[in-house]
Image (cartoon, rainbow, N blue to C red; front, side):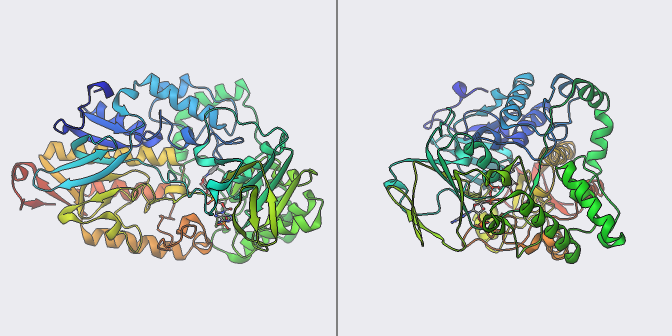
Length: 556
Ligand code: NAP
């Protein structure tokens, strides 16, 4: 069905088998997989085309911090052979080109309505349908609803008053213009030094007349040391993709990364130093593959943190700036570790300044720039790289209503809660992709998207074979999963920093690390077992009893 064939707002709802919300890598694979099973599928996407986060994040320097050989689909050997990555860490433009290539190759766009915001999703128990409304008033009904809206889709935006008064230009990293932006000779201010801000700084500094970086919490960042991929290397990769994918699926990250069984203190101080120097020289996330206990042993973690701080002093010539750039008070790798290209070096340029918002917080935006507690900084352009309402933002962005009128935002008042990060008790036939209680941001999201959607497809196949109308997890299974998730979170240092991982960046959001920290491999094993054990953690309703019946017979 194409957009032109859709009903208008005044017509009856369109009835299909499955609705998919989002056309990022998860939504794209979902429409491909489900339509390939013979289901009628309707997708919705707020953006103008496929690509999700890579459609919106066109800011200078945008690049993936996972290797391109990993950060791509593995379900199609043909696509693996037809597509060729040019760099070890691909830039946004290349990742978006890849998404477009896949959409063309698999003819995915016909399933989506683009520039279409979902405004509500409600389960009708009597009819056993999910009824989804979109911003132009149209209504769609389906048996299954797949939320592939992404863990990082709702930007936090401009967190200060006065934006309307600013005489210059305001840019959001997460909603970057589609036309080139010139910083030539301009006075630019950038707020936010997470993965996004750290990528923007060196690029904007190349042409800006002056750049002021407004930093609140310094991030740990490691050199990316990106390289162009040589044709021989690519050919070798392509010959070995099947093995590479197997390694990825059996790894904690869902991607190929060196792993170590060597605890930090099991080797001498000299050996540790040599290993850290080697990791720094190799770049990327080599550190995580150098020692086995960096996420669980605070002393080991602090020694690596101190090594990285010492590198900042080696690079940044002004000792005051170097000191301000050094992250303290939280473990390295507890925030998402950033990978940069000449970030620290940029602060040696005479036209680049660091403003420490811990010493002198931003008060508001003024017509001329930013007012801080120690004075006004005049600016022509203001860039906000202030992050996202992560994990749950897109899922709570509109009303999602389950059985008995239960609102998802009420169910999740104290934090996101689901079984396997895939399904929610009292929300039958609603599936989450890359949900907040799976490994989400701690895993390779494309590998996770595929694993989640394959699980969903298997569950739907099971239901169709057995004549089952609905599936939902039991309250007990959901609680058991969440107890394990929160129990495991306590054992890792990842829960010990105030980040978007724990909801710490959004005021009023419940705090806590609700992501599964046991690694992708163990997570996917748990999902596999849940299905193989006959879905014993789930309740089904039979199709026959569902037609017009309010108290269906339950099985399972
Ligand atoms: P982020 O990590 O949440 O960083 C947001 C930054 O904005 C932080 O430095 C934060 O400071 C600052 N900020 C927010 N409100 C502020 C305020 N009122 N005053 C001053 N500073 C403020 O967001 P992000 O950089 O967009 O990254 C989010 C995630 O996206 C990453 O963790 C990663 O998963 C993903 N990402 C990946 C890549 C990649 O693949 N290379 C690139 C970009 C993003 P505080 O920390 O003090 O709040």
